[in-house]
Amino acid sequence: MRTRITLLVTLILSMLALSACGGAAGPATGSTVKIAILAPLSGDVRTFGESTRDGALLAIEEWNENGGVNGVTIETVIEDSQCSAEAAVSAANKVIEQDGVKFIIGEVCSSASIPISEVVGAKGDVLQISPTSTNPSVTVNEDGTTKPMVFRACFIDPFQGAVAAAFARQNLNAQTAAVFLDQGNDYVRGLAEVFIAEFEADGGQVVVRETYTGDDQDFSAILAITRDANPDVLYLPDYYSTVNLIAAQAQERGIEAALLGGDGWDSPDLDTSVVEGGYFTNHFSPDDTRQVVQDFVQKYEAAYGSTPDALAALAYDAATVLLMSMEAAGTTTDAAAVADTMRTGTWSVVSADISFDEFHNPVKAAVVLKVEGGQIVYTDSVAP
Ligand code: PHE
Image (cartoon, rainbow, N blue to C red; front, side, top):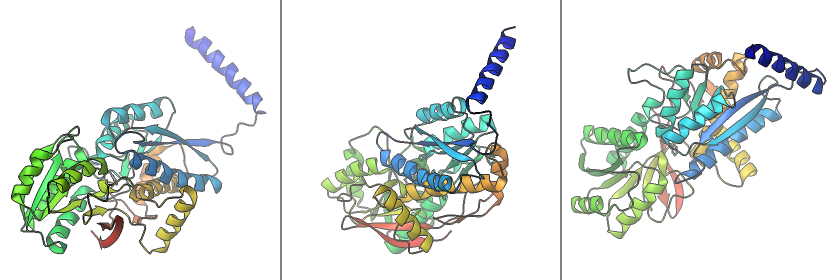
């Protein structure tokens, strides 16, 4: 009985809604698709989220100006998922359950993207594309199978860590290395492990391997060990906020090792005065002379008055790959069909011509950047 009344009320309400807009509520023109952007917009790594949001919005606005996806206007739902597992899971559930979203761009941080991929896996009809999460487990289950609805627009850490180790050995001529890692952070731990394995496989020696936790502020104990060991390089594969703390304390203690890091250093808030002379691997350099990159840099600067970082570029790319896949699949509602199209196509975007391997990872080059005179300078590109 209650169901029948609810049905009746729904029917009346929808008739009222129809007549309110002149009865012209056809499915094609005037329809919209919601896309969620989940990124850390507060806390320690908020520049990651701001760049990600701005990059994705730039792509979406361009598509809307050109008529949307096959005439369907794109709406965005933006949530602060805080680079944390808990916040990311509630943001994902919120956009799926309350907003009816079928397409998620995000998260930035691997430790947040992995739990979102589990939510998406349980739903089955929602697609996730992370612009920047580099840990292998984002797209791959523990049993080695690929998560059918999860993709990323970046390379993965087994490649990034190998590029860093090879750079340390060959370009910096490093014989010895110290590595600091936060065991509780999937990205940091994963990248550190790859670096250690590759550096040693290439004949180098890892003389210090020390762990800390995400809450640590005082690194004096592990820095004292490092000073005694006097390594050629100190690898810090964490986000800029933690790198700023560790590097400042390393400088105070007179540690002379060359500092080396990963994409997590990429932020306007990286304290260049404490990592001066250091190097980090990354996805993108605004100094790349390719026309497609320069066009993007110009558009981004015109829109936001700042130079895009890798997060902005990859969010722009992730959004573009998603929208191109929807357009090619001819649907803005069937996420599984969009995933099938995404999986098999080649998508020409800013950072690369992206096509996915069997694990939904694009095969792309890395760049090595140097902190020099307070600036971030392009030094090298490394193809896979
Ligand atoms: N790769 C990082 C992660 O997986 C995120 C990141 C990418 C941060 C690019 C900065 C720049 O957690």
